[in-house]
Image: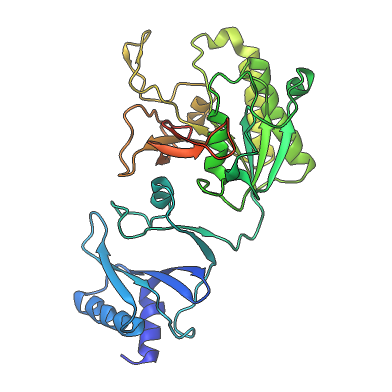
Length: 353
């Protein structure tokens, strides 16, 4: 097939996922449309191999549950009138396994083909991740050069904790630094171009957790960050006597709905780690998310809870999950920045990470 035919074949019959990884280093994942005959697929594979040239590599693979091949082409130098990348990406070489997993095209079961973490660099609009926890160890090397802002609740100011660093009242030291590291860290972060807004509260008392959402809502409104902000929440508690704390829950829900409905901010919770614990009152395993505020996901819009899986995409046995809006992310053997040093790292397990 000549160049014109190749152009028609690619643009008319294919969906093309491209990644510009460095100068003159282009990778393509080429997905044939459904309905192509075997003869057309074989002809297409032959055209791709010709385009790649003798020094390039062409791989084929088949997704689970499908017999249709896909073509992974590395190091090709195509005529740009035939194939043009539509987005710019960067490559992190030798990343941690969980980053390699989230960088995979959907449907692949192993990590042996795609070795690097690939992420967008041509972000059109700045993204702000409001990290609603107990502060972070900003001196760690994983945060060097990252865009970080600090925001403090009124209680943090009143108690004298409106300073950078993790709160000394944290029940799980290092947890807050780890979750921030997974968000925007140089080495272990997934969203390396996002701005991390560390929204620090001194503890997880009821007053603190109400204030943290109000503080974030005020900041988003004041700085006009609607539509491109996310709130990350990796804590929760099971309160069996909700009626007793109606005012507390009501105020928290009020500020959460202010974020999601008025300001169009996505709020992301960890789904919980208690699936292997039996509920004493109900006599059943706690497979569904039952901690507050994550359990609101099944009743409110604009929120989601992230469950936990291993590197094979299988649910971790302790991970709870909601009934809707329930994505899974790697959370087994997760590496992240330590909270007590500038270079140390820790390994964690759970839906927080």
